Amino acid sequence: MKSHSLFVSTLIMGLCMSLTLVAEKKSITSSDLPVAIAPYSQAILSTTSSGDQTLYMSGVLPIIKSNELIDDPYTATTLVMNHIKALLKEVGMHWNNVIDVIILVRDINDFKVISESYGAYLKTENIEILPVRLCFQAGKLPLNAVVEIKATAIKNV
Figure 1 (cartoon, rainbow, N blue to C red):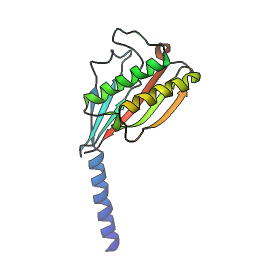
Figure 2 (tube, rainbow, N blue to C red):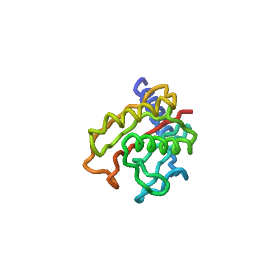
Figure 3 (cartoon, one colour):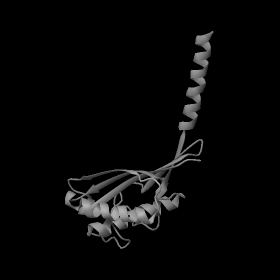
Figure 4 (cartoon, helix red, strand yellow):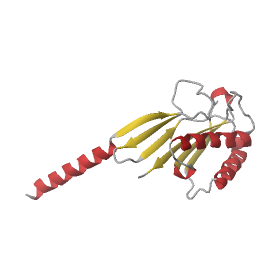
């Protein structure tokens, strides 16, 4: 009898978990960003059946609307952070929802200035808990950009 009730509880728990994991996905774009430079979504919003949301953003380059690439590391980082904020805004999120950031740099010697720009930007956003972050030099970034940033954000109901 004990093994039967253990089986039933495990089955019910498994069903509940699979119902929670069922997700709907939606492509997210922002008119505040330049058009994507290749065939990909700017972001994908995944919503579970319980309403929890995860926003997966593609890597964002420092391109202004006129398709001009910004090459100054500090200014480029600030621009990318603003682009990410625009994507977050599209789904009712804020930088406080961001949990993970990956920063790719053209030259690791720009790490300090990019980190200064990143840190200064997040201070203006009143971040409660800083996201985890990874930063590394890539062999070469698209369009030979100085920086590319990818972020993931969550919103629980």
